[in-house]
Amino acid sequence: MASQFDRLPYEIIQLIIWFLPVANVEKLMKKSPFPVLRRAATEVHYEDNSFTTRKQVVEFHDLLFDSALKRKRDGDSPAHLDYASFVKRLDFGWGIKYPPIIQVTRLVQACTNLAHLNLYNCFELANMDMKAILLACPRLRILAIAGCTALRASFLFTSAVQPMLSRLQHLNITCNPQFFDCEIRGASHSVLSLPALTSLKMGENPRCSSSTLELFAAACVRLHTLEMIQCVLARVAFAFLAACPSTVTSLLIDGAYDMECFLPQLPALGPFVSLEFTNCRSAALFGDRMLRSDNKWLGKIRFDKPTCISVRSTPSFPIFVKDLHHYGLLGPWLKQVGTDVVLKDADLALLCQQCPQLYSLAATADPALLSTVTLATALTTWQHTMSHLEIEITADNELYFSRLEAADIPSAFPGLKSLAINKGLVEESMMTYVLSSCPKLEYLEISTCLFGPETLEELVNEAPCLRGVHLTRMQYYEGRVQDWERHDRMYGDDDRDASHKAIARFKRRWDIPYRKWKLSKTIS
Image (cartoon, rainbow, N blue to C red; front, side):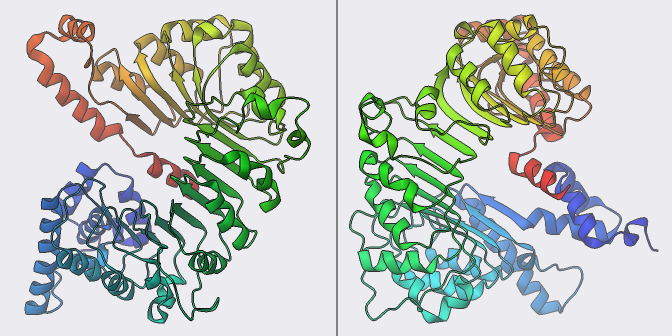
């Protein structure tokens, strides 16, 4: 008997199931009376696989090859699904203890439709194994082999794997200091081609072969995003950018110590749209020596109006908003700002003045350093443009939100789509104010609530547009004695299990990873 689901395109059914919570997908997969729903749920369930333990890898390996043996024995029976063909993503976590490498490669090679592979810290993975994986997975688009210290760049220059490499869009080769520690003899620029590669994450290679690095850079003809992670020497990034075609518009430098040598030459390498400097510990980067009016570098360093600036996790020399202003990085063209430095009243006022079109802000705030007038100015300036806000509150949250309420603006950010409140304890009154002042809020991320999950669910149920709530800490009232005492007064000593069960129920209903929410926005 035909069902109403047979009228829908199969891709639409898959997309609808993809946004369901995991528990609902499992129920559809096992108990749905409609075969089309069971198959679609099974494909969605096995499409994205993340492993955190060795046992999970072994069980998934046995499942794939057990189903393959049954299909071989009984033919293409609909009772035995080809689970391996459903797999689109395999993610082996950082802390996983791998089974024997032959079992890992056999598992990956069985997934012929694989598009996304994360093999983190697979120390036994050698060049021969990587070649076999590339040959078995012709549809691979995203490859992360961070921490695979036995790999060398020479496998990239093998002619047999060039058709597979030509389809790669994202490559992560961080945490392997010896990756380029090899000499490619007799190689030319035509040996390696990465025409589809748009995003590359590299790590520090202190003993890299310059010729190999130049050949690799020349092959990235369409590279847009470059991330140099743990790049102790920024000159390595400069050498790579100099050899790479001038298509890079997004650049991240992490952990560099010689930025004072690299920064003056950076604007000449390309019109960057996004610049990020993290964990850079050279005091001369944005220090007083470079900001003095008599410094000759000030007239030379000019960037082509990047729309995104992020300078975070730089404890040795905090980069202030005024420093960005000195370099001409602030202006109406700027759309996204991220900084770890605690925003003072003057910093927020400067951002409001220079960046009236800001739609994304990630910052740290201390309510004691912000006046009600400045907060009101910020809300008035950005209330129609701000779409994404990530804020880390370092002091009393109640003081911050009381000052927001004192600004007497009924709808703080009517166009806000996502909000993240990192750290701090969230009171019920604060949550009520946030949900009422942001009527179009679709995604909310908070750290620790000072009220129970039942109350939280009641509040979010009343939000008209809210689609997902992610709690960075699923434990309520943990970590401090007074929090436990307050928990006991509210729930009683014997009700902690019930509270945790309520948290689990809330997570099944509302917890949506950020990437799923972003994908839903892209599709819609």
